[in-house]
Length: 170
Image (cartoon, rainbow, N blue to C red; front, side, top):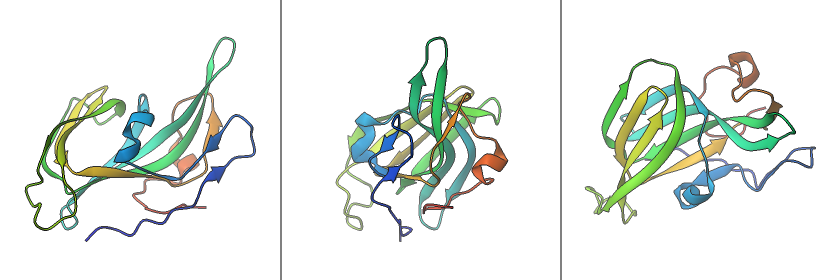
């Protein structure tokens, strides 16, 4: 029912400022993740697999310099599982994440058919509105090695276009 997720044990960039312990993150990592200022390039609703997919530029690390910041940015796929009750309310199509929150744990409506014990109301607050839905959790995949930038997002050629790929790309 769910897509196969291919993981690499960790990403090591040849720079002492960045070390990612893994390329696949899940809702169990929620408290250690931060999506503030992450650009959403594309949104997909996969009705067959009951998934909400976001193609984002994940800021892996903010690097403070004397008078400015640099950003380690990687194209990533954020996949929410067992999704329903989706509302997308935005003023524009230029979406940058401010915060992702989960609340209201309840028994999944299809608990007899899945292994998850809880589903949550998720809210993705953006600069242009919000996306809300119910889901049992997420998986986020870092698709390419992070790039150190003076800006918080990659352009389409730097990130290899739009993608909802669930494995590390070249």
